[in-house]
Length: 103
Image (cartoon, rainbow, N blue to C red; front, side):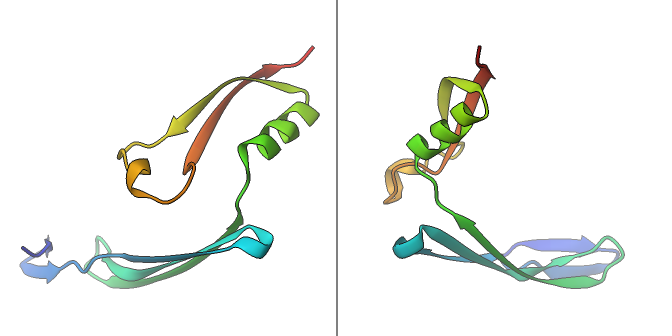
């Protein structure tokens, strides 16, 4: 089955976006590259090539930073909207921190 989008009278096949990731343990850096293209409302297409880089943090490090900012962590919620954590070889993907101002 292929994904298509109708732009006026034309039928345009929508290729998937591709995501490549890697993790560099030595400095806890995560890298990602997203490629593909998207159709614009006027019928033109735009190429997508985005690169992302960020540091991977441990939960303990985040709590320490929040405490240093005088925020007390009340609750930590795992964010896994697609229930994929069990299939990944990682501890956590995203966390929400519920905080209140420390006294």
